[in-house]
Image (cartoon, rainbow, N blue to C red):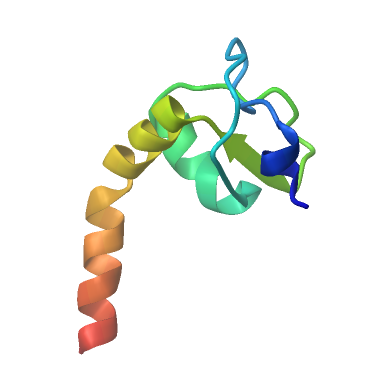
Length: 74
């Protein structure tokens, strides 16, 4: 059983909602710094995001994901 299913809390400071997604710290830290969001534990390997913060993360990385998809198509 994974940590999200066990009831892991969102890694963003000030948020106490249950996490729905997890991702590598290195992947998320660039997008979260653009959004001025602070992480509770900066030494962690993984970041756990609630539905609200995951939606913000997806919006912040939309262009990066699109360019990466185009680059792979070449």
